[in-house]
Image 1 (cartoon, rainbow, N blue to C red):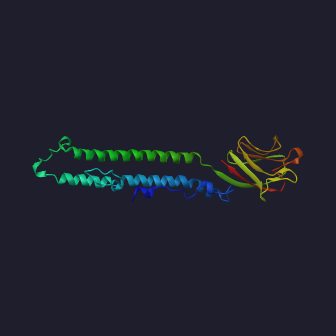
Image 2 (cartoon, rainbow, N blue to C red):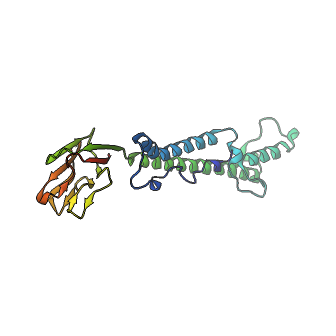
Image 3 (cartoon, helix red, strand yellow):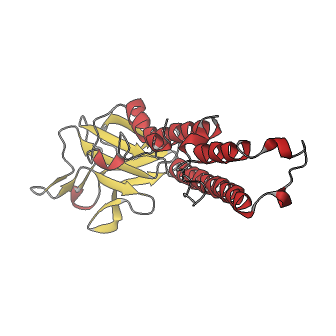
Amino acid sequence: MSFSNHKIVGFTHKISDLPDQPNMQPEELKAHFDSSPEELRQALNALCDALAAQTAAADIGFAQTAGVPETTVQEAIENVQSQVTEAIIGSIPSGSITGDKLAQDVRDRFSAIESAAAGEASTRANADSSMQSQISALSTTKCEVYCGFYTGDGTENRTISLSKTPRAVLVMTNSGMMYTSSSHGTYGGLAVTGSPVIYQSDTQQAVSIVSNGFQVTHGGQYNCLMTNVSDTVYNYIAFF
């Protein structure tokens, strides 16, 4: 199989193709985020197997020379072997052929093959290193997502507990509302670490990230904070 068959021309699932508010179950969304690193891993392993195969030399390119007009390392080796075999073996004692007794053009051919093999090994090592770096980068930037909902109880400050502290939380009512201009009330929004959802001033926080969860509020100045209104259902997405 040609090495080019292991090229990755595009990922099956791209994060940029997701809608801004994915309607997916947590496990499904996790699988979507993990699919690209998995495709990279499979492609890298397949390339390593192909390079280690006994047939690999037949797919490694060779720059033609005047004495070896071949296009692959395998063909070049066979060509040189054929030329050596066709020499007058009967006049050469067994075991007496050494590198310095070969014609210069033959030594040049072997040197060319050796250089080509060394260049291919270097290219493969660089490709493996680059691939591993990409996999590591994708692994460290992976984001976990948790989706849930709560029903407002009308308390002024309420903490919605999670398994760990999120980096961002998006809150809205289950009717899709985050703000109403009629009453100038804030029903939700996107809060990130260090930047809560506020109304008019940073002292009135509608949604803020706290340890192992996030805080929602009902009331505030002018009763504009409405992220915990009694009997109102709120949907949220937490990003870790």
